[in-house]
Each structure stands twice: as C-alpha cells, then as structure tokens.
Image (cartoon, rainbow, N blue to C red; front, side, top):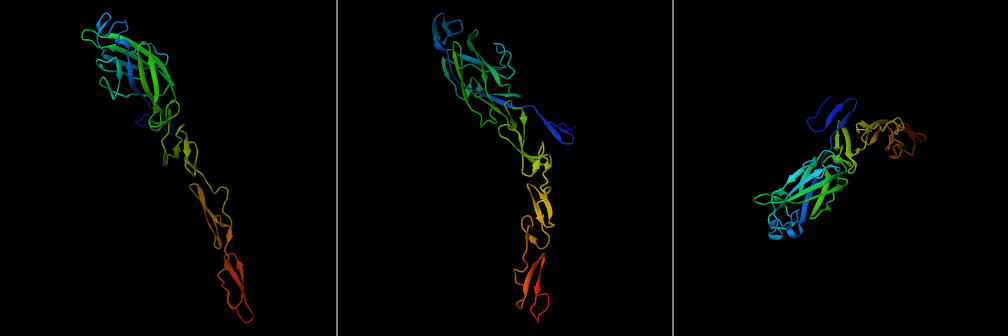
Length: 291
C-alpha cells in the first residue's frame, strides 16, 4: 500500500481507489451592523450614564460558526471563530474590507460541508474600565456549496435580535472537490492511472474517448466487432480503429475493391478485366503479352 503525503491515500490492488477527505470554504462578509439608540443589552447607552448617551458605541464582534444544534454561546465553534477589534463611535456601521483589524470577508475552511451551520455573533461595547455586553445574534444557515469559488452564489443573510447584522455568505468546494458535501475528489488526468475529466457538478469521472472502467483505465478494443473486411488487419486506436488493407483494396474498412482497369493498362484495343489486386488483358488476334 502506498500512502500519499496529501489528504488522499492511494491504495493499489488490481486497480486503485482514491479515498479523500472533503475540502471547502465559507466566505462571510459583514455588510452592516445597526444598534438602535446605541444601547447595551441592559438598555443603557453604551457610552453614558443611565439613559444619557455620551457618544456612539465602540462595537467589537465575535463570529462563531457551529453545528446546527450548537449551544447559544461563542465558545464552541468547530467551523471557525473570529474576534475583531473595536469599531469606534458608530451605532450604524457599514463595513469595508476590514472590520476591527480582521479582513472582510472572513474565510473559514471545512473538511465536509454538513448541509447547514449555526452562525453566532456576540457583540460588545469596548470601554476603558470594562466592556458592556450589547447583543447575541444567531441563526441557522443552510445551502448547497458551489463547485468552486467563482461559481458559488453570494447570498444576502440577516441576523436580527435587538440589533441587526447584515451579511453576505458564500459556501464553495475547493478545487478538485465536488458534491453537496464537497466530499468527492476528482482531478482530471490522462496518464497510466486513468484517462478522464470530471463532471463539474458531481465530480463523477467522464472517460476520455477510447477508455472505460471505474477509473477509465481500460482501453476499449474497437477491433472486437471485426470492422475490417477483405482480409484487412485491424489496429486498435484511442476512440476508433485503423484497417490496414490487403493489396487491391481501399476504404475505411477496406470494403472497396480497387479497379486496376481504370488506368487503361491494356493496349491495342485489348479488353481489360478487373481482378483482385490485378487485371487481365484479353488481346485481339495478332497481339500477346500481359498488356
């Protein structure tokens, strides 16, 4: 058995089987966050005393991606966790390519797409003395991954509780991975290990012309049906056959008997009779010889 250093393991028997873990990514873009009134979870202004606001909130965010049945906290995040720095003095945030020092969109890798995930976001207001709890937002997002980053749809998504967060999400399989879970590995090849391309939706192997079998490694023998006639020799080739004709025949299948009389080889008004790979001249009286 031969084990590769990548994710895939190559097992050689009569043929070989490729066993792989899946591979894909979640792209999460924070678009906008709105905290009406600039208040914490307790109803008090983020920056101020009691019900008097001094300035807008300084929000920081923790984004946690969990299984669909995960708990409502940001401590269990099997699909990834990102924590931003503060976004200062703004209760109505529109985000660009950076959120509190974290690149936006945020990219989270996964091994197998489970069909859906729970997106959990915890929001705090940053203060000099101690941070104030603002809100917790969570929702379950389900989708089928795109088969690559360019084909995947960018989907608007909203998390809403007391405050609201607008997102754009994209889930996609990595290169050479396919299927609803990004679990099917297929890499086009044309060598001694196989001759195939990959279906762009399912990752199923599509044999190149002239090949068959599970791994498209068995060459199709196009001479089995005896396509050549008139004692021609059949030579198998990729996706077809070649007939090597016996003398006196022509055509794709050597089905044409060459007419050797066409060139008028007989002289002195002799009659030419076509033969297989030859001709016969019937001479007039007084003449002899092959022609």
